[in-house]
Image (cartoon, rainbow, N blue to C red; front, side):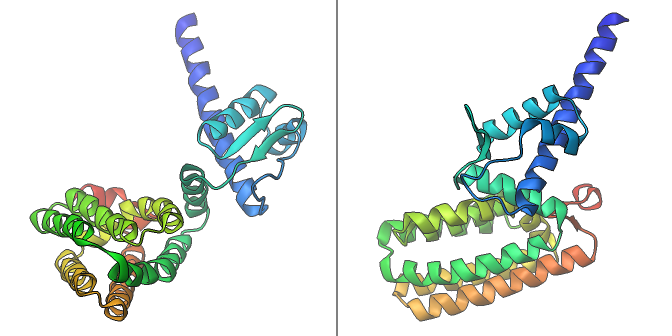
Length: 252
C-alpha cells in the first residue's frame, strides 16, 4: 500500500512538473521575453503557478533540458538563444495556446520558402538535384501512406533549402517544417491532395533543374497557397486540433 501511494505521488508530481513547464513556456511567449531576459524570481513563480518550490525547480530543469532556458548561478532562469529545439518548443506551446498560429506558420513558410526555391534554382548542382529527385520518388512510392509520404515531403523541402547554400535559412526553416509534420499528414490524406502536391513538387524541381529562379518561386508560391487551403479545410472540418491530428483522423 505504501509503495503504491509513493508511486502515485511521484506520478502526480511529474504531471504537476509538466503542467508547470507548459505554463512557464506560455509565460515566456505571452510576456514577449527575448533571449537573455530573466524569468521572474523563483518565489514569484511559486505564487503565480500555485505549486511548490520543488515543482518549479523541476519544471525549470525540464525547460533547460529542452534548450528553452538556461539556469545561471546568481541570475536564475534566463531565456536561451534561438537554437532549433528551443524555437520548436516555443512554437509548439504557441500552437497549444492559439490554433490560428498553425495558419500563421504557413505564412512564414510562404515568406521563406518562395525565396528558398528561387535561390535553389540559381545554385543547385547535379548532386542536390539528384537528392531532391530521390525524395520525389519516395513520395510517389508512398502516395497512399501519409507517414512515409510526409517524411519524403519534409526531406524534399530540407534538400531544397540545403541547395541554397545558406545555413541560416536552413536553421530558420527546420523547426517550422518539423512542427507542421502532423498537419501535413492530415492535409496529405485529403482526397487528391497528395497527388496534387506531388505534381507541384515535380514542377518546382523542374524549374530548379532548368535554373529558372522566377518559375521556381511562382511554383512554390502556388504550392504553399494550396497547402494553406488544405490545412484551413482540415481545421474547419475538425481533423486538426492546434496542429495535431485528432483522434477521429488518427483512427482512420
